[in-house]
Length: 75
Image (cartoon, rainbow, N blue to C red; front, side):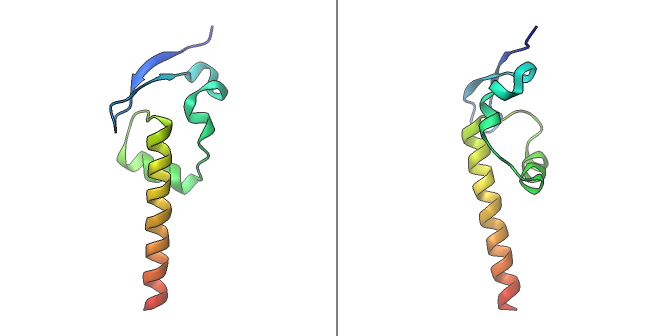
């Protein structure tokens, strides 16, 4: 039996359906993350996030990495 549950995003408080029993149908499956991006999110949040917040955090991570790279080049 497929396990689905309603969850609240710990970042924005938006409700979404978590489909942990059928992850390919879950809203988070559409968000492609590198291992580094996934680790960045896990360092800040322990529970599920909505896809919108995952995308925002991915963009935040990429911006931070770009800024860090630019700082290294300027030294």
